[in-house]
View 1 (cartoon, helix red, strand yellow):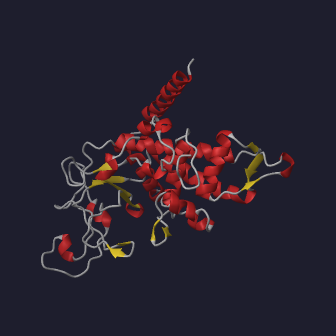
View 2 (cartoon, one colour; view 1 turned 180 degrees about the horizontal axis):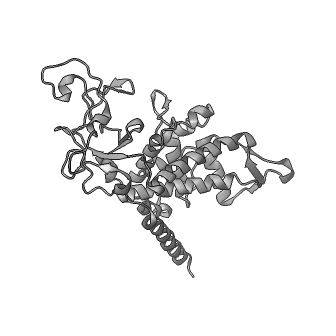
View 3 (cartoon, helix red, strand yellow; view 1 turned 90 degrees about the horizontal axis):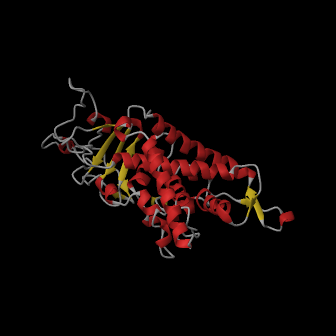
Length: 329
């Protein structure tokens, strides 16, 4: 069999396994209550099921990868095990022991780093348990647009002429249900929050989905909002099939999908203190800031949502060797 034919066969098998996994997964609407069709903030026409299935797949790949690295044995340089070890070093700050008797041709994860990988794996498992079991604690989901905004004053909440600052709480917009079992949404049907700051600039009066925001989670309210621009990105399966055609230097930050965004949000959603840590005055999104966190304290690293996403995506694209900067080698 020619090499090109063999690669085509592998591609078909890989995509088939991806599809088989997706078909076995739960649906988004079995997990989350959404706003009524036609309502501002509803998710009409959005591929939510694909999004959820992608997140489950990414978590599964990360769980398996960490499980491999936690096996009580020596690993040898070269092959998939070394690839996973390099990714764990870059994103989880894992250091490797190299027994001298093997002349540095073998390695294992340092004992003091195993707990960190255990903690990360546990959080991937908790997120997937919630998704696969359909138990997301009364979860709610909205799909945002540019007209969803942060409140600045009471006037933003509909009280004309009252310009005093507000302290609105997101869950009031998903409050009681009516006789038809639908949530009682206010006329404007907007999530309106107290002013927040991004990179030192107030967000008061600005869209919740203003760039670079693509999704947000309010864990205490069991609410995830996926911005409309999330769904303008390619699917995980389509990207997987393109790996061999990517040029050298292709950066992993270019490979975002709705499912990867949602997987990041689920790490917030499980409510285990996982937030967006700050690196250089900005939220730690993407390979660079995540790798920077991996060089610092463990308690900060394990609490950054995007480390979970970046590691899972890097593992998922299994035909790519990533360099220390997150680029295809």
